[in-house]
Image (cartoon, rainbow, N blue to C red; front, side, top):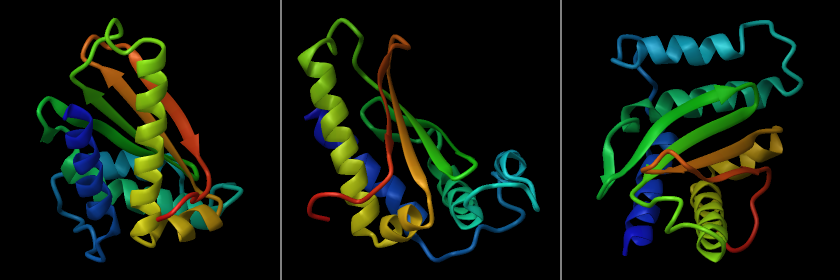
Length: 159
């Protein structure tokens, strides 16, 4: 049940990123957006400039979802661009004691597969990955333990 709520939360977050609405310059996330923009300064040596810009725009488009409760005790704690990488961090209501061994591998696999299907199913993923973009998913338990930290670089499976 908790995993299903987490998955629905990811749909909502990626739905925000896929919106065509521009991010207003006076939005409450202006400070965060400035920090995101500073990650890839104008005229930087980014090896994949289109991917860097896409990651920055996706991160800016998702700022409204940071700190919102996306499900029972499920939150996106941060989203940012690091060059061509879109880094998303989440907290979930599990501890390392519960999420050890097979449980941890299962959540890593399911979260990665679901996030990638969602991003690619929206049509954003194919373009993002083709430009050299990378999605990094970090999931932490309520005790601060890292549940997963994975990097996705291509759409795979049915979208």
